[in-house]
Image (tube, rainbow, N blue to C red):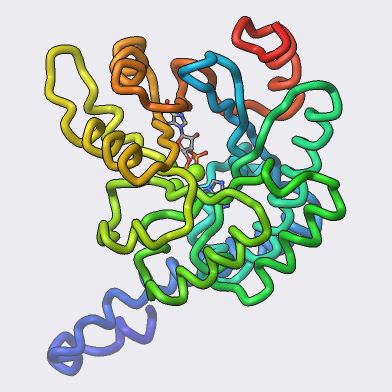
Length: 288
Ligand code: C2E
Ligand code: MG
Ligand code: MG
Ligand code: MG
């Protein structure tokens, strides 16, 4: 920046974008730092998984959990995925991080199953993971290692990941389905997938994005949520609403025969040691 200061404004002419260089450097610098610290975090085992229960509206039982990654940063505290997943995706570090999440979550849920809770587990896949050629092999190996049956694992991809390169998407989805695992389309309604392709996807579940669920308010039309539930029923897919925060939302979804719900109204994502007692004493627990 000292250099930049030595040029007169005239010399810089139209190239006065130079004045922004320090700011750009800062961004690049901070991404590089994040990348390096993500590498260290992996090596030092600083990632943790929080589990959010998924509840069946029909049986009122906890039928599964979604695995949501966090970074227990030594100085900055608990970091949410939005603060590090994008850098992990750009740098490719999402591949080892995602594999760690998959293995840990399968392991944990297998252990809950052994203690008598018939739960399934949902794991989020990023675009890069989904298109990685070793994906099915990795999943197969993790299932073998953890002795989790494929039917207990659900992978979530977003609608925008699925909408990219449809023929490739369909063949990846087929190979996952052939293994026996389940597939959900996450954040449904926010992407641009064509409905005719949706019909060709070998998927099991639509997850209604929480922004639509947030629109369910007393005495208001909730057309989008209703339309997605109807669409799922027409296509014979299961439908889950995420981000359920109020009783009104829960009642509305039950009335529309939404299959399952997830949200703060019922339970926030919890660390493994806090979810354990919750499973054991909650009235909606399958054992209760
Ligand atoms: P998502 O898969 O759509 O997960 C749902 C998000 O909604 C989670 O945010 C969850 O904590 C939050 N949530 C749950 N119930 C409520 C509610 O009632 N109200 C509101 N306002 N929010 C609720 P989180 O944990 O911050 O995760 C954000 C996103 O990060 C996830 O969205 C997912 O796309 C991504 N992500 C999380 N874990 C992983 C992972 O292991 N791998 C990859 N690739 N992505 C992940
Ligand atoms: Mg998800
Ligand atoms: Mg979502
Ligand atoms: Mg998402």
